[in-house]
Image (cartoon, rainbow, N blue to C red; front, side, top):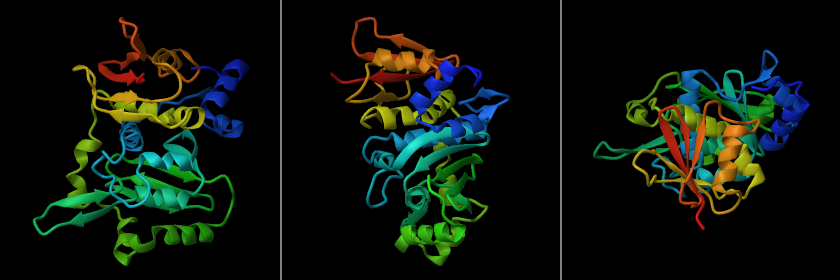
Length: 284
């Protein structure tokens, strides 16, 4: 990874990640920019977030809350940056995004249930400019930060207002609890470790490249190839070759990732990391 004193590479980071320079410097470890965490739990949580925030329409089984879908929340995001022990996303309205992500569960007479939001996600704390969330099963952390400064009291007030009808005494207690419900435990396959977890986590860290530089048309669709688990497709923006080059050769590359272009010249390719592979496809 490049040293932050390498001005050319620092300039690339700033341009591609759309992150303020002081935030980028604060994220350095021993003078180097480390985008990808080695913490297995944080990786699993970031991979889960990528599955959610790039899901197609309301295809994800937890995407049932009224209003915007998970993918449509991109309209609130300004930048994404990993800092030690957490992922920080700067958003325009942190309490509103938190409300979409925080979980509630509907249980029916036959014992079945439906999740709204992310099972296992909790409010760890609220600060003057951020809502800090903790995913209990993975111990992954997410900071939803705003650019402007306020007060802790105001942030609490705005969070109560945004949660609206969901802000029952039971939910308020639940969102701060230290344990999982049986219904939440049943969702564990969604955050279980897989060979593709590090690659999905790496794509989540670099999500602002999609959200800020190209129209947000990127979404996850079922993979076509038998040896890939997902397909990331988009309708506008760069070619698969350009995206692949960005992810394996630029300043924000995913270490050890390999990009294989389609030998037939189609705008379809494969991004690989170890035994895992994800298709990249841009429809013509």
